Length: 270
Ligand SMILES: NC(=O)C1=CN([C@@H]2O[C@H](COP(=O)(O)OP(=O)(O)OC[C@H]3O[C@@H](n4cnc5c(N)ncnc54)[C@H](O)[C@@H]3O)[C@@H](O)[C@H]2O)C=CC1
Ligand SMILES: O=C(O)C1=N[C@H](C(=O)O)C[C@H](O)C1
Image 1: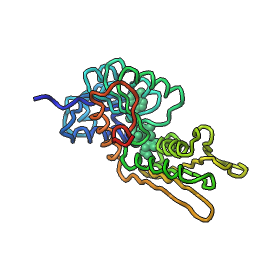
Image 2: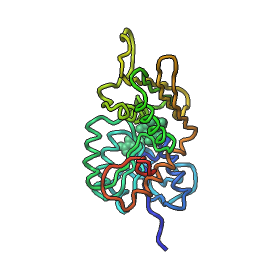
Image 3: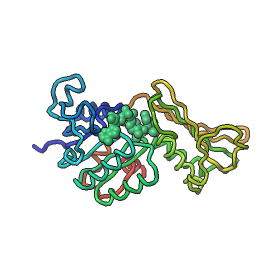
Image 4: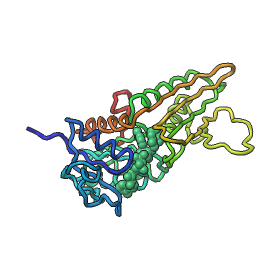
């Protein structure tokens, strides 16, 4: 009998890393074959199971991504931008698919990832949930239907450990709204207001970020018009949502041609 595909989780000790390990381990459609952490982390060289306070799993945590990726079908990566760029390179070298949940990329990071996607399958999304990906489609449609009398504002809330803003999801929603309006997000984004900012510019898409406590992730797209407001909202209650989406992407990636894909492709909504 053939074995289920091998999956590697990077950033194994992180909030998402732990959730991904739980999700892959619980699935009968995949097999956890590797766990990667940053060099110097105290889990390196130890059995993953004991690091997590349970029985041994036979998976030894490593900082050698290329060795872990070799022979695996996919790597699930929710870490940090510079780490993800290096993992994309390792995925391209080994032919392992790379599912990227990491957010906070700069333009150079994104072009490096696009370079790696010439050699392997990369699925990248600022949010792996079905609900948020549906919300991007709704956002685009509403933005298409309304003119600039409706001001678009995107408000996101996350836990107090999050390091990037606006969130990857907020930027996805901003891109969708901009596409609906037929403009480039870079030309209309208003990110972070403070002091005497002047009145709001017609056509801008505004972003605001709230950070506090353990909020998993909440996003509102507000269309504020004359005398009325439409609010499209998504609330994530549980990180398992993102991990299940990432595993689904990894299974979907099998046999696809090299290239960069997103969750709309995976969910068949693209
Ligand atoms: N696309 C999506 O659906 C979601 C994306 N995210 C994103 O995932 C990323 C991680 O989020 P959290 O798990 O909350 O962060 P975290 O800080 O809890 O975990 C990050 C992990 O990556 C590890 N790491 C950093 N550099 C590394 C390297 N060079 N090699 C190997 N491991 C490395 C850290 O040691 C840590 O264990 C963030 O960018 C976040 O925005 C989070 C949730 C959902
Ligand atoms: O850092 C997080 O936690 C999350 N990050 C993603 C983002 O930046 O949008 C997705 C989710 O909202 C949780």
